[in-house]
Image (tube, rainbow, N blue to C red; front, side):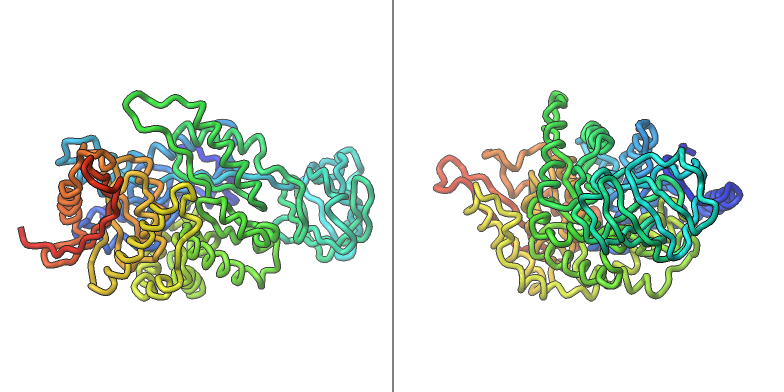
Length: 572
């Protein structure tokens, strides 16, 4: 078992019991997974994507293979507890890349090199944050009483005498230098995920005086939230920069940027990633390295208030409900979630709903009814992906959690009202390149027509042939109700489609370049059809719609054309 950088808040005896239970059930789960056949992909594939966090419960080859077999689309590596040693995340990433997926079937009979799977990897950064420092008297725990006076300061208090009683006097160090500039009388300070609330009564140069609104213990290095405050924090810390550079080096597909508050934060992350990519050599004969796509995590009131500008700059959004539920009143979280999901749908950009979706399954083999409703509602609202955190990272039932998530998502997918989304989506300006606006407007029209035609003709599949992923993203933006099989020529492009609802990337088994003028698209369409049949997505008598981009020939009067074809498969 690999040594984990995750901090698991359990006793050693409990961890051992959890480990034994996980090991005993893994063989049974893998045996069940081995019986799943790709001839009926709907049993495993869901239109809604599933993100699974890797950790102590899932850091073995058997566990990762089982996650892949049971429907994981994206593996999340959480860097909140990671240090400077990257051996553990590198090992986890290697497990994901080597796990057997549907491409293992294709690779067996292919003359071309094929990856084992196209599961994507998402690196979740720690981000800028505020934490408590050493306590008075360097004690491990300091207890506040209701109504006690607490001075919150940037000064070191470890040499002070520890308070004789919970009534104080208390002094608490935090690592936020601008506290006196940020807060005012009446502001709140929330400690340790909101377990203790302080209200500011006086502001000085380097500190604020508060009164404790409720009693409780506090330790050093606990999180500090300042609701409703505009924070003076950088977009990237030094640790974030090291982690982002590592992400580019190993070929991560997505980066989840934590505590994004403004569009400028997103631009800073993208600029740093671009700089990292530019400094890395491209192996001879390989495609150019692509920058990881930036998924902005919305975790504060400032991020919610500036959501429109953040969305415009981002490649996707994560609704991070954990910190968000502390930064804004908990009663407003569901409304903020619905707003962000709807705006992402309108912009044609993927959105992940995360945090505590099946939280009870860290301890129990079945989800609560409220959790089932939470996941189902997120899918029906339009989430492209739903995420498992502690459930798969450190829970007792990681595989069962994924299976439950998949079953709920599949049920919701079947009643998803795609027509509502199709009717309200016009030209997705966020996806359109202003330097190539005429071409992208044509692509938008063809993509929308393909989704509507699939619904009207009861087609079983939309096949897309794409070199950059743009065609597949435009089709996905119109919320299709049938799978979109996206045939790609670049592994990087394929993996970056894993967060788009309904899109299932597949490597094109041909050495023909779709962008080359000499390539006959009819040949590639035929190869794509054959692969779709081989994987079990369609069979004789099924209707299939294909969408692709053809480069004009020398004698043509156009540079390129977008094509949509409707076909009924015949028996071989």
